[in-house]
Image 1 (cartoon, rainbow, N blue to C red):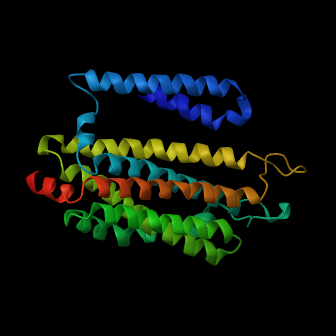
Image 2 (spheres, helix red, strand yellow):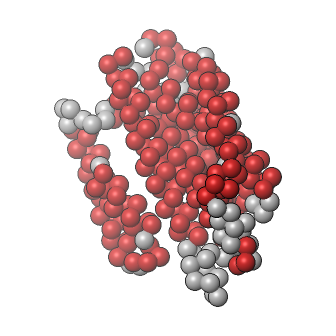
Image 3 (cartoon, rainbow, N blue to C red):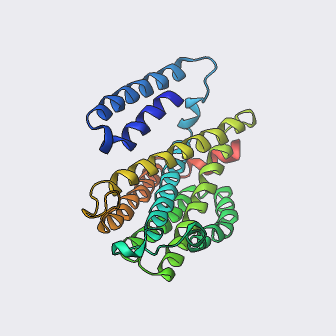
Length: 265
């Protein structure tokens, strides 16, 4: 799994440097990934029991964990790059790492607010509400930052929204699979969302790097054009849209099934 995931992410991250060779790496990685999934399905002792993903909302929760990981990685990268760009180039704040971390402090603080509430809602049988609310808050924060990222207070608002939404999403994504499986599968139910979350974070970083590499200021090689940050946030906002879509499909396909299955587990 590590091998094919590495190939896919490496191809995405280096596409602006290695050119066409990256498409070959990407193809090899995708084929290897398909082969790994097929091998897992046939194995008598799989790393992840993929049959577990057939439980109501289990696949949606894992997919949401992946996309929330992508959201957070994209958000951190965009904020760090923009704020630490010297203002002499025409944009940026020229802050150091400490200054950037203070701008993202609401991101960490709001995570304490939504986590417990999200877990309670999942236990009450409302997983779709948790995932949708978390995705909506993340999307709102990213769209806000797409058009408002020049001043300190704008980052405080945006980071608070993203933190509030992503923590709710993580709490829901981790709680959902564990509530619908047998006790002996609880560890695996926690392991799948955690693994795909880390892969999602790497994916979000790779996508954001591609966007910021599309055009550089001619006089300053390696420094992205300022409008690419707007596009970076908007591209990152597509990830929460994916969560909303997946949640809507699960809610339509399995009305009431999650609460019933949770009662049996």
